Length: 447
Length: 185
Image (cartoon, rainbow over all chains, first blue to last red):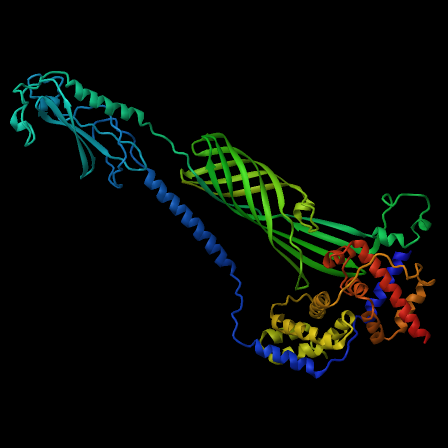
């Protein structure tokens, strides 16, 4: 009864003064004109970025990432370790200064084998042994040549050099003590090297000198140890989440307890009932809320911890939009609230299954979102508004990723997200729907 | 026939400088009435109006038209916001929950109370609202003329929701008393 009375009184007062006007002096317009004149200096109007511009920026970013990934993929592509004796055809990259793997000794076709040609001089018997190997090392394959270039004073001279195609880089001369071998014809030996000092000939036959064999065995061991190793790859991801759907509610407006105390509430109740069981709503008042699902854009870094587990973190930008409509005594009053958050996610990804570039993984973690900007518009006028507190959330998801090339993959990650109540007065989707489905799609670039 | 708001906006957006003056002439009186409900001193209201109209006239190009009357409501909203800001800077407002000096009962006849509103001239009623204590005045204006709920008023002014309701109740009682005094004199 009394609330209806209050409602009538409010409406009567409003209507009585709704069209009321007061007189103004001429000085008011003069002052306004003067202020406007001061602002006549050319101003650069804020130019909203047209929608096509945003798409162009997004497309450029995707193109740069895709192009960079393709170039990185091209660079890491290389021939597999050799099966034959031919040198590696790696010509695009400079030779690495790191130790190079060696392949087991192979005879070069056409050259006399030391094992079979018993009568040839040592150098020829040894032949030109080409030991070539390739090891993928930062995309720098090299060719290793190990040659027994002669003997000197009973010592076999083995020259090992790294060589790119057409670009001999450096050479190391390994001099080892060898058993007396068959004599080396002068013509077969490089200039400046003489035959064995003791006049003995280098032994012809099957076996290389022991020390030379030891050197070659060492090289073989290095080759065997240089297994192709898959480096842990850091991934960089771009994603967008949600962006569709909304949640609408409509509430009556409760009379506050203190206001209720001022009225003889119980007199109007037919039986004793608690106020909680019989709340009093203000007639003609209604509050409607529409909460749009959050739109998120993120840039994440995927840091591998082990072969199947990685940690993901980065930065996420989220926009929350809500519309509130207050209906009071027949008047509708609409407000639009927009909240902007910057979040830091932290989650773990566990690979469950992969097949030919298709990966399925489980993800779980949390995120802290910081409200960097809050905007409230009421009939075109911006009003002051307090920012929200830090918003914590937990998420669990299952992800599906397809690597288009090893360096670039696209993924979709549907999951469930729970938003903790941060105790603030700001109403938004997080408070209205603390547990919500979440879909994240994006691009992941692996280095 | 009075120019429609849509036509006026169109003229402003097409660069008609006179249209700005027409906008001011059309709504300055109404804006003054709104301002006087918040700030009883006319000179101070004039300063607030000057700020408000500078903002109105410079940003009217971006106004989003929602139908006849929306421009007027927008003007009133800007003036109210500026007035509230001015009050926060210049007046110390108290939002007390306890009103020991006020009678607890409303006038015996609710209809009498309503008729008082109709019997008091609008310009005097406007002045009476301006003479209310700061907290009551603010809450009454926000509730009656800005259509905010007590919850929103509480959030806007940084008070409890119950305080907002109490202030409105007190505002009504004080206003009723002022109307009584006027009508009995």
